[in-house]
Length: 391
Image 1: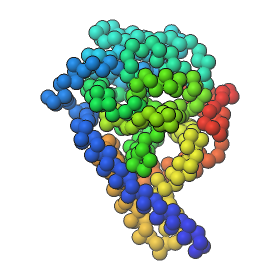
Image 2 (image 1 turned 120 degrees about the horizontal axis):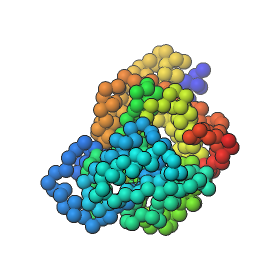
Image 3 (image 1 turned 90 degrees about the horizontal axis):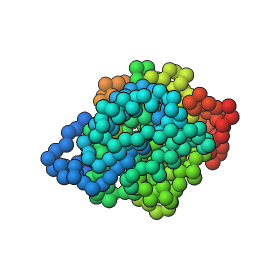
Image 4 (image 1 turned 90 degrees about the vertical axis):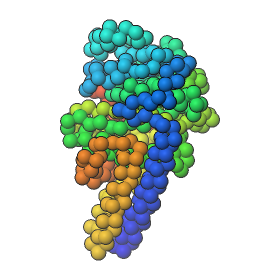
């Protein structure tokens, strides 16, 4: 039993080190945001930024669509209402009968001054249908700055202006926009959002602090066209986590990969328990194959479950649990408060420990199984992160 206590205690100590790194990393990311005068999603432009409106940076926004999802109209409208004169919107659907087509046509009629196009791709020959849609939109895009943006992303009216400012300053070749997760009405969506806004982004900021940014995260990615000249979409067509692989390969080729200082919102929708469970298990199994050693290291990102286990087997060490809870609270506040400015965690802070326990369960479950469900279909994950349709 002493050996077990020592082993669990060592893991708790490692998680404390990780928490401290999380606070330092969030502080560094927060300072970067301050230095770049980056916009929060609801912040208005100040007078010093008006020169960006006349910028020569042209931006093409690529949005794959599939059906009418939660808040889709509001999400898409936020891009039609951008305060930037030099951009276009491209949408892709699999077939003309997709319900999203009528919504896009409606918005195009409401905003005739916004350059926008709808592409019907046909059935995807790729396992990853999203990658196929992006591969069709990329050559059709007019501009050399491309933003891939999921249908569940919502942006502030100054989003493109801020991106243009970063491009003008030549900060990167490829970047991810950090996002605040916004839940639907179900408790499972709320718990997932709390995890994304504290644990997930905390881990991303620590990764940047330790080794730099060698990844991208799917909901909103900014890229110069030369990225896709060097890494064609068909090279990513069989990967489930194509966003991570894109960032990894770009870094290996010597491109500058970074986190943007511009925030967006990622609306999670109203998944039931079963749907949310399937989604999070898919994410865990995919992450394990995309970065296997990093996935094992995620044990340190869940300090509370480790401290609970230690206190359960050695009640005399109860003070370790208290100290861990306090440290975890500071780390969560650093990420959600300093960087993401997330009101969700301020309101529902007492549910973060519940989410931490749930996250630990999904992390453990991710070590087993290679089958996933995605948009009503069944796939088999391979060890290299590619996947195949099985039903």
